Length: 260
Image (cartoon, rainbow, N blue to C red; front, side):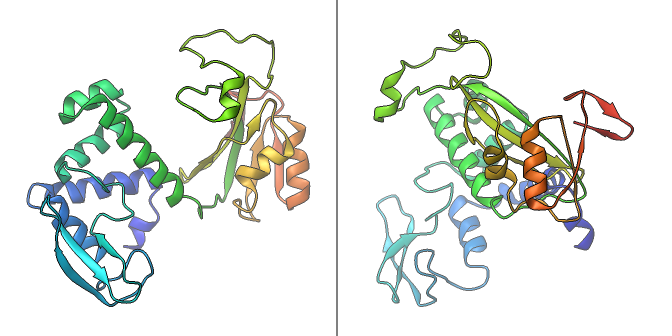
């Protein structure tokens, strides 16, 4: 178990898929979730109470539970990515494999026998779960950091601010030169164990505040941060007491064993 814990997150995920995959065909989704969720006893996912009883079944046949502490009823898939699904565990595992392979939504939908809209919804449910699962992660050792920029898009957004500019079609032109507020800034960092952090921080150029949104409190004090020559990283490192090495050539430049 100790050796497994030392594996990078990507390798741990691959091992988990291999181990679970051997059992998928023998389990339906409800059985799998019941075994996982109630492995240490029945606990309410809403209040954390332990006085949980069976409470009949839904029209779909799914088992319902009731918590005697808070009085709420719930199904076994409550607060999971499987909530509301009508597909089996084998389909979900195959979809995770499609995501790991970087397949498009159309190819994933075709392989899994689901619609394009379902593939889209599942991808966002899984990415949201991954994001919440990494909120407490930190980076250690040699940490390489940089930022990337993507054009702003409000496609499908009905909020007031999205009406200030029409939805940008794929491949649409940027109207202003340079890193204007037509781009979102996404600071990213990764350590040599494969642990990575990234998050949309602001519009326009990178800033100290943008770096702090992603890396603030998430880098071990003994770590060494490697970045390009951006002054935002110098200010961030001074404020947080981190050792900083800046590679003037920027992304793609190699300095001994260090690079970005």
